[in-house]
Length: 300
View 1 (cartoon, rainbow, N blue to C red):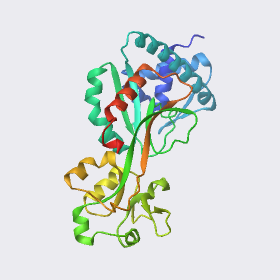
View 2 (view 1 turned 180 degrees about the vertical axis):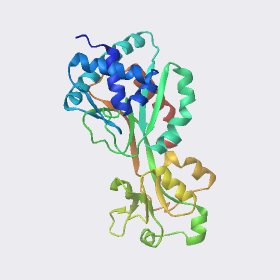
View 3 (view 1 turned 90 degrees about the vertical axis):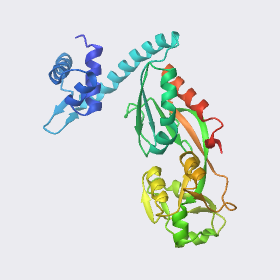
View 4 (view 1 turned 120 degrees about the vertical axis):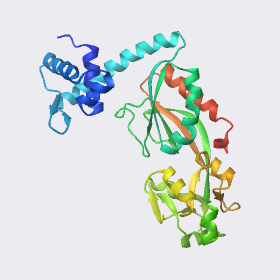
């Protein structure tokens, strides 16, 4: 029984893609060829790795156990290849980056052209998730996380900080008036997050002299959605500076409570697995990102 790397990669890709057809497209193979490779692997292992139904594929107990080992082997081979690439100082290969949609749109996307010009052999895959993901499960190399870190299994590299501000559009203020005191917010439309609750703590002190926790009138999972609602004059919002700089510069959003606003700055970190040596492509991206945002509006 000589299992090949090609068979392991095919198996892992089928699991990640969710179907043989999707995996074949990613691998640049025919559907029949991908199916034969998977069947050959199961024959060598003398076990069924995936249950095939008309709607989807499901890992068997044996398949789930084997998948972990397969990923370790694939990552070990990729790591060996990366070491050789690093020796030539040419980072290459696919780099999977995950970040919240606003950070991808307002920070990462404007930097991609410059990064690709410097590291043309790195294939960037940018994914947006509003919540915290499992890096291993999502096959993510590096994630950008905003706010305090809680996962001790991850390495982290500080990228910067971003200040929080309470904002509204001139159209909203013309229609409903500008609140002068924090307690007046209760009579306004408050735009907030449905999760996590910590994002609804605004950089203001309430009547009890405690951080002001907002009960939203309108909820959303994405800061970008809340930004657009604020731009449309729907309500008052609290967002990070990195995603509202142009809006503030052009007057499309106006800061409120200038005197009462506390100097609250969210840490921004790049994170990756603690048990994995940092690859040259991860290092190249994190270094480029950190240098690019240093001294910008994210820093205050």
